[in-house]
Length: 156
Image (cartoon, rainbow, N blue to C red):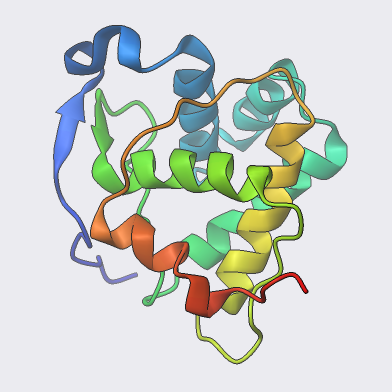
């Protein structure tokens, strides 16, 4: 499989974030990275369950990974075990938080990112049903692209 060039390559170490990056957020990110590695997928699912996600929530995240691997997806996960956090991974956490706060998160179907947005909405609902607290952060232009109001149906 050909390697994609990073969409937003800025990376920072976990230590640089200090207290700004909660233990739960670290576990969620580590679990998502592990889901992408067949040898570590079972451990990733175990960690998601330990965060309070039910089987449906775990499946939502498992179904998200192939969508993140598509060429037009603006979020790229770093490999399992990486001591760094990419800006796009932080965008993923913020998108989950913000989408979970919307009353009805329904993406427009006529957009190339619709499948990814739909799955993000499922993942956001799963996270919202857990005690996991995601922190509010600024979004990069990449994250703003995912939350672009033109890509979502407005509630009437």
